[in-house]
Image (cartoon, rainbow over the protein chains, first blue to last red):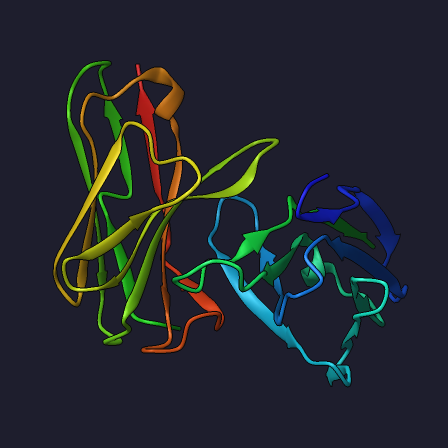
Length: 112
Length: 114
């Protein structure tokens, strides 16, 4: 079982749609969770940190369910510019050096 | 954007030659990381550093070495490049003294080994 698993997609949605991504992680002791966005042939960029209480940033909402060991990202009112790959990232904390474990990413394509 | 640069941005080299990639940061962050990204594998950690002259291996360290003689520079060396090392290489940095925090990435280096 992979440490961090995501549905690879692609998710093809029309502009204005709401889309949700889920991610599961295997290490129940994990403490830090993030969503990154990666555009084609570019570096990953931090989109949101995920907190236990859930957090929202404009059209983006992240949720953490520790009991089920999954993290979600909800994008409302999708824009063409949201087209990218979204990476679920976990710090399992069993390691030293702050190493993060990256999911393989979920590809989103928003169409006009 | 975090102040991270990578050089070169693109490189084509021949099998068997040594190659050094450079990561430079202006943020004074303690932690620095080298990843490679390949289709079907996502981002995989090669080596990381938790301070000047302090480095450790990641999950795919074979064939790679690193050095960090200054806080701002982290070098990745392919001792003898092979075609399997054709990849996109990303450097990342993390907040000083705080392991487990979010990482910020450089623009990447596209390396092709022929």
